[in-house]
Image (cartoon, rainbow, N blue to C red; front, side, top):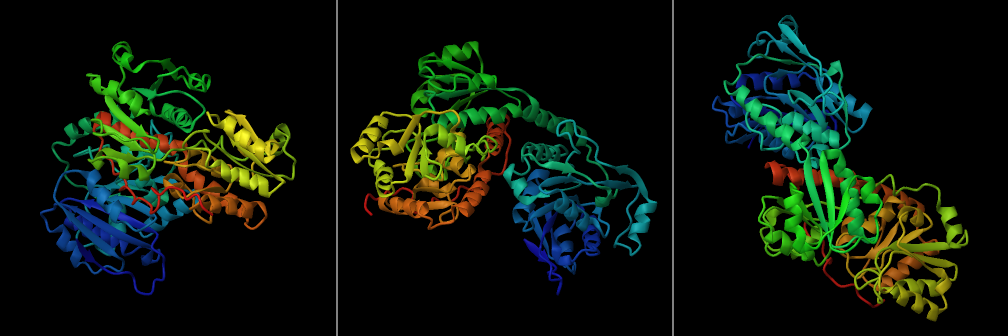
Length: 615
């Protein structure tokens, strides 16, 4: 890597954007482009330029490094691969600006160019800018003449104003001149490096930005000039091949069979329901199979057009012979993986490990999705098969709706009572008998406090009996499995999630989406969702959980501010974002797409420790 230029002395500007230029044997064009950036009418410390030299043989890197530019410039040299996506991805990964502006190596940028892009992002919020460009009949000359704008206007030919894309209901994203937020580009996997040669890698990135929910905007103020250059003789064939890949992975219907163990009112089932809801927007045709007859969600899945089959694992081959699928998505490996392994078809396999006990040894031939990064430590090699995709929640369903008072009246809770609670399964892992001490102790300590626990399980009767022995049974409310989890949570003031193990903890994110701070053990999942002291508290012992709950109930913490922070944090776990990540995973296993995935984060310290029973 070579570097040229330095931050403009005395500009005092904050670096806001990175201009990314992919170049192959365009040395003089790149030099002129960088010179036009030196004449921008915004503070030169506002932006940096990153030139990625795709194995040029004309001295591009040396020429860029020799330029004395008044803004920071970096040149990255890589072997030539004719892979524009990979070239630009290197630039995005190196970039430090919040916004990345992509321009072709043969563009010329008028003085208001960078400012125009940034003003659109400031005015429109999170968006993608499809900018204008105008082709020139001839180059303006080298080195860049002082009157280059007049020459460009005299040589101007075709003006390209972004039209309306057939696929995004907005202007297409064409990286001759386009911009987006850097974090958005990373969120959707950057450019698909399957594309080689000419065409469609930029439209493909734009389509995924559209699926992320970004608004597409355009304005003539972003105009840049495109200098003429010879086309590759293979451009037509490359474009046809790339167009086929683009259409196949984004618009061809895909049949997905989700394989579950059972269907109860649990986090896994809600996860699959939300995933089906999100993927319905991504051309997916879905069915689900369960080992045991459904006990819950009998209406919700059919409402999405998802048929639920009661199917024994040894019937899988017969079922697939009659109902072919493109992807087998396994959510209950210990029930289904033996049958999936025996299946000799060509169906792709994706496995999601939801719980702390999930392990695959060896991994299946396709991909494994981990709901929480802590699960990676428990998995066998090779780790490149694994993708971290956090679970998501419906932020419209889980939001305060003003039904809390009505729900309290329905449950018989006094208006001024302080209510703590959570959702989960009364079993060995979640609401275990040991964890009951948290709820029983705070009920005994605070006579005006109520506990509301949503869910079912074999230990519910034990909880009720233990509360009766303590004389607090009337204030321990256990309505069983409920459909309107958010409505019941709105009757709470604080979520207290007493669990022995937690790989992720969808209930915690749902509570935060409802604006509730969460008190939870310092385990793998809560460590990845709860910000200690800001959106709730992470505790090392039962005694600490009890103490934190009593502090919150007696006014020692600003629960209103913590609740607002919790809602903001929960917005990072939208089910739509989760569904988009699974679309990327399906693209990989079915179509060979090559996205950039963030490296697995380090396992947080202490996540594998058992919760201490002591105070």
